[in-house]
Each structure stands twice: as C-alpha cells, then as structure tokens.
Image 1: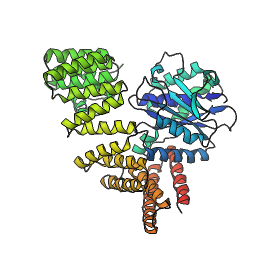
Image 2: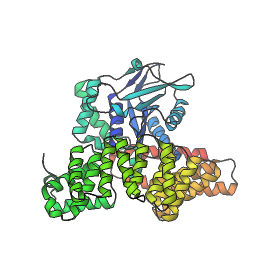
Image 3: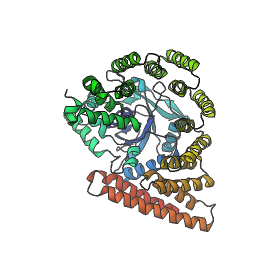
Image 4: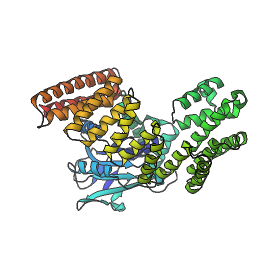
Amino acid sequence: MGEVELSCLAYAKMYLHASQFPRCSVNGLLLSSSPAGAAVCITDCVPLLHSHLSLAPITQLALTQVDAWCSQTQQRIVGYYQANACVSDSSPTPCALKIAEKIFEQCNNTVLLMIDGEKMFPSCRVPPIVMYERKDARWALKDKHAIMLRQWEETCSIVNQLFSSGDQTLLVDFDSHLDDITKDWTNQKLNAKIMELISPANGNV
Amino acid sequence: MSSISELYDVCWEEMRDKLRKWREENYRNSEQIVDVGEELINEHASKLGDDVWIIYEQVMIAALDCSRDDLAWSCLQELKRQFPDSHRVKRLAGMRLEALERYEDANKLYDSILQDDPTNTAARKRKISILQAQGKSSEAIRELNEYLEQFVGDQEAWHELSELYINEHDYAKAAFCLEELMMTNPHNHLYCEQYAEVKYTQGGLENLELARKYFAQALKLNNRNMRALFGLYMSASHIAASPKVSAKVKKDNVKYAAWATSQISRAYQMAGRGKKENKCSVKAVEEMLESMQITMS
C-alpha cells in the first residue's frame, strides 16, 4: 500500500463539515483528480450526510450522483470519511466499513478516514485523522508515515481564516442540498474561496 | 464588537419575540440564542417581566451547547435565587454537570429529583441522555423502552428510540417506533418518509413496495419533500427491475418511476434557473436519471 496525500482543500472541507454538525455523525466521499497509481492523492471531498448515516436510500442516491459528477469532471471516488457524534470514539462503524467496501470494489487503493473529534481544537499540533487501508481482507490502521499533509501549518491557518471570516457557513452537504435543492453540494463557491486562500502561500497544495 | 441590536437594527421587543419563536419551534441554533439572549439579559432584563425566567432557562441551555460555562453559571444562579427548591432548576444544574462531563454528579442530582417525584419525566430522560453520551447504546435503549412502557404517549421519546435503533442497525424495531409516530401524527410527512427509508434499507420486494407506498404518502402530505420524491423514484425503479415481479407490477412501477423522474427534472430545472452555481448538481441528477433508465429497460 502506497502513500496517501491529503490536499488542503479536502482536509478543510472535511473539517468544516464535522464542525458544522458537532452533535451529529457526518460522512462524505474522498475524491482524486490524479490518475490511478501507487500513491493516492486526495484532491477534494464531497460532504454527504449528517443524519441517518446507516439508512440506504439517500446514501445510494448520493453515491450515484457523486459518481455521475466525477465522470463529468475527470475525478474518481477514492475513499470515505466519517466523524462520529460520540467524540471519544473514532473507530469505524459498520456503516463506514460497508461503504468503504463498496468503494473498494471499484478502487484498489481505497482510503477509509475517521476524524478524531477529540483532536479537533485550534491549537492541536497533529491532524485529527485516523486512516485505514484494505489489507488481507480487512481494514487495518495505516502507517502514519505514509500519510502526507503538505503544508500542515498553512492548512491549519486557512481553516482558521475560514472560521473567522464566517465562510465556514458556505459549506453545503448532500443532506442540506436535499432540504433546499438550490444549494450546491459540489461547493463551487467555497472551493473558490479556499483556493484563493491557498494560492498566495504556495503554488499548489 | 457591535451589539446584535446595532448589527441587525432590531429593538429589544423583536429580540424577545425571536427568542420566543425559537423556543416554541424547538430550534437548536444555540450560537444565535446565546448572542441574542445574552444581550437581552444584560441590557433589557428589567423590561422582560416574568418572561425573563424562561429566557434565562433558554439561554442557559444554549450556553451549555456553546461551552459558555460562564454564561450558563450566571443564568443558573439567577434561576436558583428565584426558584430555590424547584426541580426544574435542579434539572438545569444537572445539565450543566453533564456539559462538564461530571456524569456521576449529574446522575446523583437526577436520582434525588426522582426520589422526591418518581414521575419526573425530565430527570429520567436526562439519565438516558447520559447513557447515550457515554456510548452505552444498549442500556440507553433498554431504559428508553422501560420509560415508554410507562409514558406511552411521549412522541419525543419514540422518535429518540427510533434514532437509537437506526444507529444500531435494528431496522425492524426502528420501523415499529416510526409506526407508533405515524399513528399519532398521521399528517407528519417526515415520519412517513423516515419509515419508508427504513423499509427500503431492510430490503426485499415486500419492503420495497411498502417503502414506495410510504414515500408516495409523504409526497401527498408534502409535495416538496425531495427525499420522498427520490425515494419513490428509487424504490419504483428497483421493483421494476426485479426479475420476480409480474408484468403488470413491472409496468405500474415503470410508470411511477417515470412520473417521479419528470417531477425531479422539473424541480431541478426550476432550482437551476438563473443560478450558475448549481449547474453541476443539476447535470449530475440528469445523468443519474438517464443511467437508471437504461438499467430498467
């Protein structure tokens, strides 16, 4: 199993999603716009649900729509993330494993990412994430050294900026889209804001 | 930092009315409640009359939600002073202990309320919430079931139980709870739609047909419920695609799915009008509908 790189954009949106619904479990899909290879580069994510994660219809619907969008935009679904409502428990739930299995059917290097709620505070030095990979027919913890988050300090600062400017409210997940279909679950507006914050710091993150 | 009244150009009466609306409709917009409520209490407490106590309670709970223990503490003190022996205030003190994760102390407080008054439902529910916060789902489920044997009409409790069962993947029991809720709230489209989702998740032809019927019922009660519309589309499509159904059933479900498709397309066309930003979601839906048409025929 190769390296996994997590982009600032993907990380920021996941973090915002978990922060927007602190009392709920949330989940979403991890996408890559890079070609398939030994290393996985997670370039974006789509926040999906904040309620009834284990019910089938909306999850199926979301997977189909994200699939359709990915083929239109040359991206692939390469993983799944989840943040549990119970902050002290960041282990994958049966529902998380099920969806990750489904993604694994199409993608060899599927990443299962759990957000560790206990580490989600501003001054935390380590990324609040735990990654799993498919090894010997089960999901095993990934070696921390094979996970790359470039420019971690910049990423943190960008997330903080989003909170202070109030832009974190721009995030739309699939659930919110179903409540109001004029809202855009691909988050074009928020993506643009985040890319603006990234570019002065570095050429590409 | 300018005040809420300056920022939004509202007077204290409007702030008080907003708080009432949020209270009556049970919104959990805690950050807003704290912002508006704190200012109202600090600047206009004398004008609020007897309303001030219920506002203290509302603001205190919102403050706990936002980790504002300073504000929660001062609200609690005011309430303790005014209602020294009240069980209602004691429960609030318990909630503050819960927020500080002092669960044993909170439980002791609730137990003392229940010793005095065994029918105090609020204290019992808080004890169940503590079990949930500690991740003890099976115990929470057991306690909630016992509670409902005594207080069979408590809608909130039935709904909470359905959520717990859904999390535990016990769909049959979740369906039972939702059936109770639908019986007592026949006009609530959300319960119909949730029930349909549970049935769909259980799977199998019979459950899919039930799901489709209840998605349809939800739509009848609220024709803008997008989850119900998509649910109807998906269940009808799956039934039509099943090799086990008769030609008539297949034909009927193809019709239902086609109707749902046209409604979905129409809804997205209207939503997408003039808005450049959701072109992506509109296109994704169109492609999904097209691809499922192919698999059905």
